[in-house]
Length: 316
Ligand SMILES: Nc1ncnc2c1ncn2[C@@H]1O[C@H](COP(=O)(O)OP(=O)(O)OP(=O)(O)O)[C@@H](O)[C@H]1O
Image (cartoon, rainbow, N blue to C red):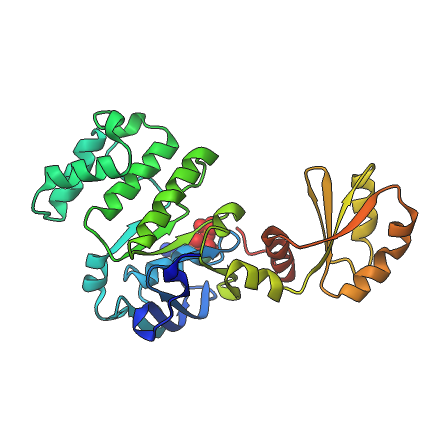
């Protein structure tokens, strides 16, 4: 955890919103959402498809007006000062939106000119160096692999030197090495004082955030540092190895006291919200074998699967 992550002065609050609600004609997709984000933090936004993450990001940066609720982003009112917010926020949408038939350098220079930067060529060159894009600078953006495209999009986002980055699933479909490089860069930016709000479905990325919020059906179900979210779920977990795990899983799913059974490679994670009930429900199987049962710590993924199982499916 960085120094920024533990700093907590009230004046350092970058996002401060209360009771945000939004619907698109039907039932609300974001309900009474209250959150605060501190400067220099990487704040992860997690939740199933359709849970309202993008809608929330768009309300925070002034692209959507909430039906009710209020608050500030970078000190500006999210209802009345949206132009100021947009000037200081970099928003990377789910879809790559730069010009496929321009090179990396041309794209970056173009963005620099749109933002009226003093020295667009220099700004583009600095971004190219910063993101390690030198060897590819003259390659057409449309010919880049997914990972390099995302890096270019990030480069374009940070050109105007925003104070806040909103990244909506920035690494979806990107390979693990490119994802890691992308996240190393996000950490460097946060270390320099940039605040980053990022939505993701990847557990390893969630674990790289200073704070996370889990949202489902437009409501926050869990929030805190990763370890806090795991601890507060109060899940008891056994890790089971050995033969016939699929048959065992089928049997366990029928038992009261077992709330979640999930295969992880050659292991089965068996969890329950009530430790005593879980023990009782599994006692005969643990005594009998042939599998080996050991007490384990639930992973963040265990916790999220459990949280998801508590709410109805919201995907379309
Ligand atoms: N402009 C819109 N008009 C109508 N419905 C919308 C609009 N934008 C979003 N929705 C609906 O609102 C709900 C929440 O969508 P949102 O994109 O905020 O979820 P999400 O958590 O970002 O999902 P994902 O993980 O799939 O990106 C969905 O049911 C979506 O279909």
